[in-house]
Amino acid sequence: MPMQFSQPIPPITRPEWTKLITGDIQYEFKNYVLQLRIYQLRKDISYGRTNIDKAVKDLYDLCLKYSLAVQADFVEIFKTW
Image 1 (cartoon, rainbow, N blue to C red):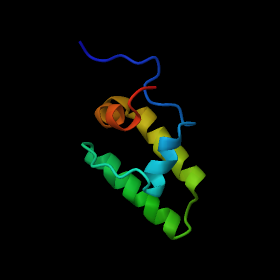
Image 2 (cartoon, one colour):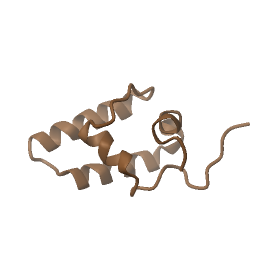
Image 3 (cartoon, helix red, strand yellow):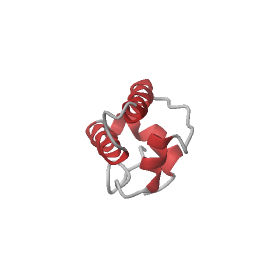
Image 4 (cartoon, helix red, strand yellow):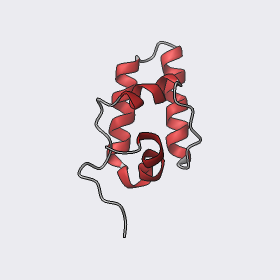
């Protein structure tokens, strides 16, 4: 039976979101698109095209839209929510 959550992804207030963007959490993603997006967001921050808050919001919105695709990675990163 698949795992069920009251919320499709962890709340944006969780510190892990920022740590994923800043690189404080190093994780080998199963979802390659998610890995590429985080890499691109880090580059955008380093070039001054965005800031951490906007990058977290962008990542959160993407993951909310594709919550089933990121679920396996998030169970390992966030543990519970």
